[in-house]
Image (cartoon, rainbow, N blue to C red; front, side, top):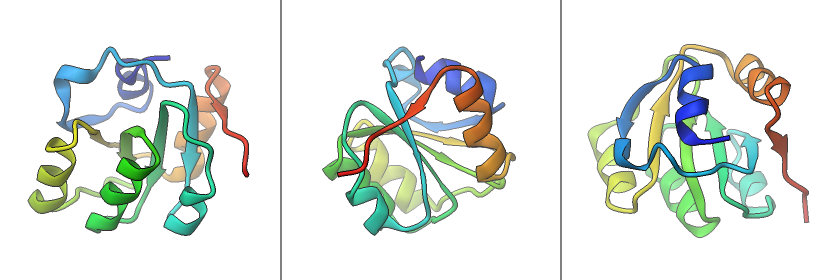
Length: 116
């Protein structure tokens, strides 16, 4: 599945990283706890979260997450979007809640990763 596929399935707004929509996504992680994300196996993943602080971008960078989807219609600050853009991380926003967004991705073939 590509980032573009995810954006279409979740009716996302593209906030940054539009040039990277053809990147392949192999796994997904839905969490508001960055400590849980740090336990997630990195593998060209998408992170779904409702947490809007810069730590989300820093965590995504450490874990080689290439796309972040902010759920529940949340929009991060310009600081957060700029931080992501500087690291070539695609940032999307969807009106779906995390449960529905994860379910849509799962039912369309995207799997969760293994926990360490």
